[in-house]
Image 1 (cartoon, rainbow, N blue to C red):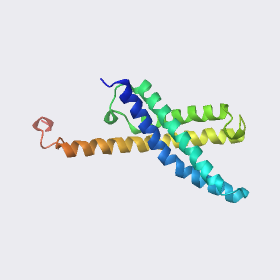
Image 2: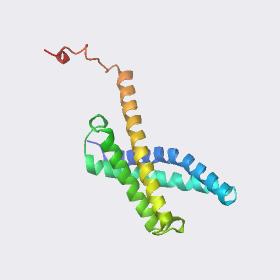
Image 3: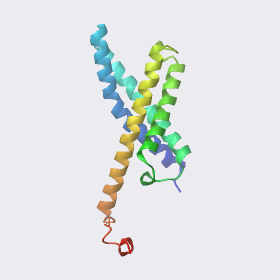
Image 4: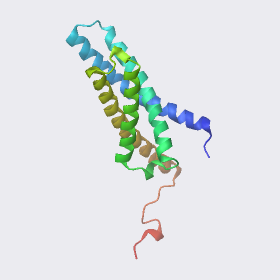
Amino acid sequence: MMSWLQRVRGAIGIGATWAAGWAPIGAVTGWVTGTLLDFPPSVVTNYAVMFGVLGLMGGTIFSIVLRLAEGRRSFEQLSLPRFVSWGALGGLVLGGLAVSASLLGSGFTSLGAVIVGATTLLGAGSAAGTLVLARAASDHALLSEGASRTLIDDPRSIPR
């Protein structure tokens, strides 16, 4: 049984991974916004930091949603569409919280809808990336331990 400290560490790890992926997207968004609207260069940094923080929060929310919804299932037992759906739900919750807190002064306006849509899409994409990375890490761990076996190695797997 995993202790609650291991679960918290895992949730923060997923959040940190998402933050690392979202920050460059924020930097590009800030650069485009700054170029189009003639904002100072500090906008790029501000957007990168803001998206990084949102990624951290989004990954943590996703991890909580996944834990509540899927319980003790392993990554191998989860389908990609289902995993992506939970990521989209986590992004939707994050966007709703950001808009409710009037992030960027948006409130419930068209900009608020864009924020909710962006966090939902980023959540879905990040969840897909998380599952791919988790499965790759699991496969790598099995290979390094020598525990990987092919179907031919297991006589019980031969159809009769």
